[in-house]
Image (cartoon, rainbow, N blue to C red; front, side):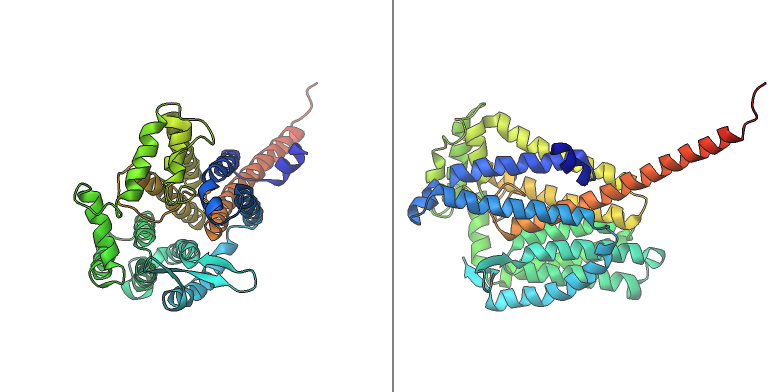
Length: 394
């Protein structure tokens, strides 16, 4: 059974193992952390666990199908995604579900499931940038034909996401800059994009609908002793969870701060993990993401095509930066944000789109493996022909 499953899964085995480890850890963390919310909503923790398990299984299915599809098809898909993403982000800002002055979600009819459009936007922009940088490599320094379409797409997606979700927009902007550097865009053009991003960022912070939220969070982070206790409550509870976890932790399911943390199953799941599994568990989880990044770097360097390399680089950087941003907030190294821990935090669309991103990376890895096998089989045939042509020894 296991051999049959393995025979149908291609690509980097380490990444498959990492996905399984994160999924199992996610189930344990979500089951442990949903007791309080289950009690408040008059439900059982098992209901949340089953729902989360269904999303993980759905994510694994999407990952499987994404990795089976030749990654070159994503170049064409990226154009469709960008055409859909822009109006969808606009729709979310105007008609989306508003929570804490932020319109990040839209509700999918019939199934009544909320959908965070920025998750789709991240996937769309990264694949589109990889396609555009590859297609325009020969005239990459042409301002009108190459630079303006790239700058326009990055700036437009950035501002549409930033108005409701600044942390996600900043991370996506950073990944876009990394892709521009890898894609051999000139320093002058990269600085121009950075300047445009800085102007847009200043406008969002000073004039955006969430300017008061940003100011209060930065104030709570910079001066916690002067901040409103309600504004620093989440960060303080996360620090207590981490401090009481010690080296070995309290053990799975024995967290106490899950009863006080507002979102121990999503934004602050890392604090709960450190509390239950200790410093060793926290370091182990961070190492898993670092190993994932290392394996992806190997895929990038081995990819014979620029599109595959840019695709794997952009998606892996995005997932790793997001993971460490979530951890940084939990341990108090940054102001509070709403960034989930990839494949660990409880969520719907976040898990699904993260799984697709993993699948695309595995598709690039699968292509590298197939090309390598073809080359090796070609060499073997060539050797057999040469040996067959040798004259018989008397």
